[in-house]
Amino acid sequence: MPPEVVEILSADELRRTLNRMASQIVERSGDLSKLVLLGIYTRGVPLAEMLARQIEVFEQIEIPVGSLDITFYRDDLDQIDLRTPEKTDIPFDLSDKTVVLVDDVIFKGRTIRAALNAVNEYGRPEVIRLAVLVDRGHREVPIHPDFTGKTLPTSKEEKIKVYLQDLDGRDAVELVRRHEG
Image (spheres, rainbow, N blue to C red):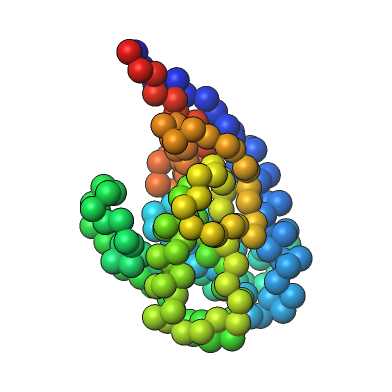
């Protein structure tokens, strides 16, 4: 039996969600000259770029964006699909900055824990915040996003698929339910 796929966010809903998140980041960040966004590979990177573009539209200020690969900081490499690590690119000093980590989905929290460890290699930010497109629950570590696009309680067997134009040719978020049988 094929999996059931339910659209959670359409392209328009995704755009509106990112606009809202960008507004919330601006409101909470105070001095925007200290704000930087760090996207976590893979889909966190284009999401960070999209948020930065929207902040620029709102505030007429360019927000620096970096990318963070957390592969070698993970504590569960034996339990996840291996992939070729990407290049971390942080072309600015993180010291005394407001860093917003950006990722597509938060589940157990282990990716974010690894990202926090990785950030420590690149400086000491004044504050680190977390922006995620979808929070699906089931945390194994005490990490909670500061900015959430959509909270969607799921079962552990369900999957969230985020599609972004730059990587996938379309924008959407889908819930995938596998049927036993």
